[in-house]
Length: 401
Image (cartoon, rainbow, N blue to C red; front, side, top):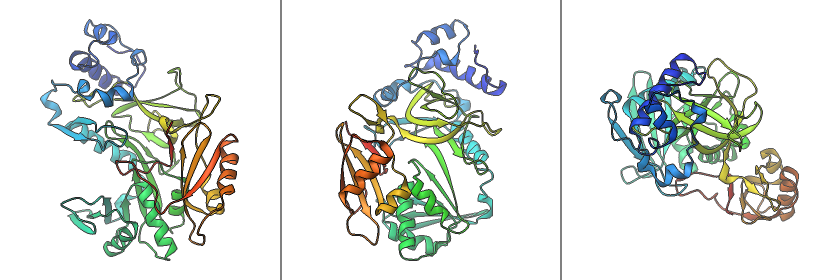
């Protein structure tokens, strides 16, 4: 049974999930709440312990449920890239994927996808798809082009050749595409750009805004949960996919934060019976929005990033690494990344603006002092390309201590 205050439909879905999990999950069924649930006791979601990210990644098999009702469809198994450690075996049901698609469509309403007939998805090359390959699928509503490339210059050429108007791409790669087209004075046909997986920088939003008529819509998703939230076409905040999951934003004491405050993102997937994750601490930080919206019960003002990428200070505090993109551009940095190597040492990796060969050391120091406060020694290091993680992701901030 359930006592939580959700709307009736979601309360029913959550009660069903908890009953199934309490009976069949190797990880959860020995917890006190699960034993109580099997005896018919009332269960409150907020009284269930948080599930740490580290446990899921190190003991994934404990979260795989062997007994899944046939009504959920086939079990789909995938492995994550392993960019945050060892690859994680993730299991979803076909029904869960189907509901995820419905939620994605609902939350993307208003962006005008239906107005564009040609879309492109950039993918990394592989053995079957060498760099430069274009695979086109024709559908009644238009064409979808799969572009296989890891090179921004090549991607620009492919976009021009296919004439795509909607581009699905990782944020860091998108910066490279738009930077190259801007440097060369190339006018791209893009009208809508969708991003997922990485944080969207202020720089990328400014670059998209410089393309006449083009808009950017960001989605927050993970391999474990699929879609979590989508940016709204009307208000610009992120609306939770709360017809398939419960999103909580909690402080360090596991108490819900107030609107306008930053907290940890904790997710409960309501409908994935193959790998139930209850109160799963994503390892991410977000700011809870100050306003509500009828599209979702939880609205996020901003996705901040992973907790592990907060920087540490000598006095024990953890701070959010940040440099305003406009200030960085004015200082001569075309693209940059902050890496903390000790409590007092930060490397600022950068690609200089086209009109510069190098940027003086003191400019990086001044930027960090202004935006993050004094106490760090900054070393600016020029690079030819920004380093990516093992999974091909770009991390704007990385704490190595």
